[in-house]
Length: 577
Image (cartoon, rainbow, N blue to C red; front, side, top):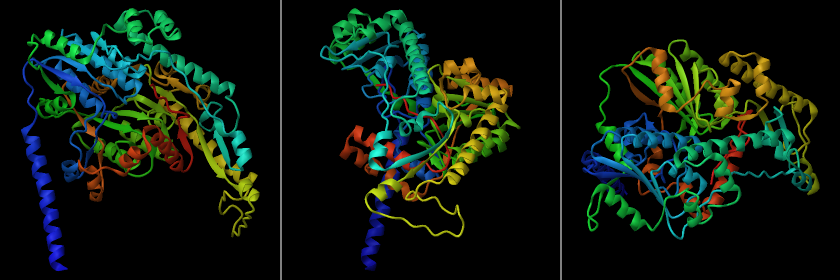
């Protein structure tokens, strides 16, 4: 037994030693960017603004080194603008998962890149509306002759479960504040309320308008004409898309690459030099010149739903967030903080704990918020007290409202012959989903919801320098785009993350500085195997087995199971296909 254990330990140490050596020397080798090169912008593996880092350096060594965030990519594109080795960018993103605000920020970076006189070209076998929105920034757009072009406007549908609850005996007891808090409306009604229809219609039209305005600017087609094309499905084939000037060339990918060779003056029988955006981003991250000044601006990323605990790159937890603000406050070299939010909300208590850290930080240095795809409900809660709030035009924000949901199975258990008896020392010792909800417990729960809503609105009123009544009139759970939020006072300025960083520098009265990214996550070393390149996570295995769409449904069910306590959560999620 001792021999077997010894051999096992030896092989484990040998195995991890090989990985460590390979990682270290692999990083040292780096990526060579040859002259006359083109960046290939494939965004398949990019979804978050921030790729994350660990407090334990060993976790960084064994984590996925290929992972970079969108913010890193945007910085790399800015460097490529003046890099003499880079002559252009080729967009080959068939499967982007970026949100609308992220896509807009990337479009702005590409538009700025083009000002250098360098080209941006795009090719796809087919274009979804989401992918075309990004690709429309290119100088020349190619589409496969057998490809599809999807351009038909936005729509949404909501399923209602009131009758299902009546038939099954499974009832979701809803306690909410806010007539627009439609996250729970499907459990209460059989059709969309007028208030929900009003906000959803306004939201879709506002988002669609921002998409059309950006496409119009790059393709030189009026928004009125773009709407005509969408309504009449006048770009449903490659030929129709070209006829309506949405694309430039109908050709196969080899023709596209030949065109790049021609632009680079490379002979037809030779390959042109290219580098992936991921490799180029890593290269620039290790070779970029850091400011000689000691001044820093902390950029704290809050991305994902808000829950308790440590959090990670896909979930906001109070552990990593509070620690980040505390470190930023104590570090004398950090002169200002930018909070980058991409969150539909979540747990109200965690939101309040993060809000408190921002309040404390504001007393010693300025805090500026940059909103990404979402900063709604709990996401707006943690934004409302910043010195300045930036949002993109198509950011989804607001949703100032709270709710609680209590599943109740009493009618179902009665129907199938199960009787439940309770014994308690006190009248309200426990809520049971197997007995009918009594009015006293419901009233106490509603009191808690109202208390959280009042706290939420009060925080917003104080942070935005408005009265309680003014906030209440635009709250009630209603969702707004960034454009609308600026008009009603929930947002100060329309702009991206770099605009927010410049604002933070201005408020701190510094001109020379560099940014420092947070949080640093504290993860247990037992999670190492999930980070190894050959080790697939449980989630990846389930996704392969179920398929992408079924896995998405499973994720929604898991999210519902995690909703503990009173929620400050956006009523829906928007995905553009």
